[in-house]
Length: 200
Length: 92
Image (cartoon, rainbow over all chains, first blue to last red; front, side):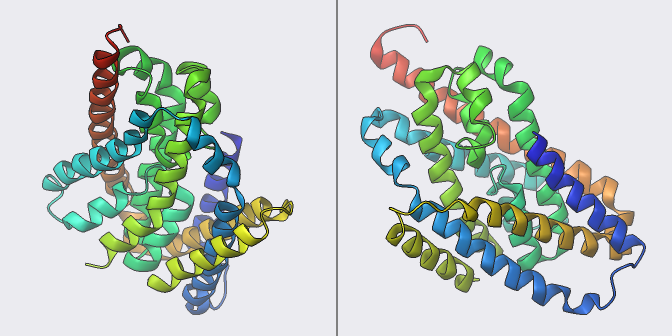
């Protein structure tokens, strides 16, 4: 939670700097942030390739739970497709791009800003911060009414790091591997899905 | 766009090759780059009067998309949970 607050803090400081026009030469900003994004994706790749423990632990997982990432991805996209019907000024693919962040707001809002501009990037940031907050606060209720997989599916791409502690508390220790596997797969799908939906 | 995904794959290859080395700096680099990029996004938002004026509507849109995405995924995950436990024959 503290990590998320710091990230939001940086965004807010940026907004203030922008409002006050404290930053000179903002024309170059697009290029700088593109290069920073490339560096970020390279580092994200390294951490994925380096993490062989996830691949090893998958062998011990009940095969049926492997369907959970599929449920998360199709369910979220279906929900956002329905939501898009009531947002006539947004295209279907824009809404699906926001949905396919699965709570991974830091990376995906940057992606969407790069492809679709800061307006949709802001929607993506807010929508996905909210998704993480709902996971953190709503996990006990979700388990109670929708079973132990519910906090994991809501956690989306964050279930192998930021929301893992709350998931182990509410769904139980038996679901740690499910949660890590789910986070790993959903996390991995974000760059592909966002790029795909932004290419229309 | 594909360039960025290709860059990530290069990173995965590098990470896999270095799998026997400890890479403590990488998580720190990731968080630093994320801070920097979110700051840039903030600056872009702050400098754009149209976004600032529409922030309330953008917020409502965000809530709507977030909630609908959550509802969709929770329903499917619930269906999977019930399916798995119906097969086991036990109560969830």
